[in-house]
Image (cartoon, rainbow, N blue to C red):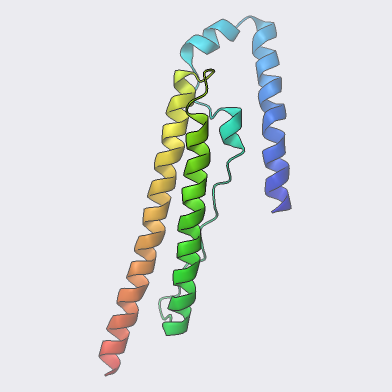
Length: 135
């Protein structure tokens, strides 16, 4: 986690250095017109949750109960992440590229959440099939 925090703290420095380089090379106006697809700084502070661990194929009932809680916690964290992204959508300083990046980040988080939910559903179906086969 400490490594992630270090990387996240380096982003504003990198962006500031990039901004300075563009400004001094005279290409700032051109770059702004092209509207690079970059999350605004405010959205870069939003924490995209880490997916819960994969559920083993031979998970028993207790493992599924634990996995269900982890998936629910993950989904709640995703709601907070998307809320954080949404808080930056009303800024006056957003470029078209910023808006596109926000939409892509939002869509990625939804796709990620759907993949995790489907993995859980597959694990539950496998459990039920194994239980039925054993009876």
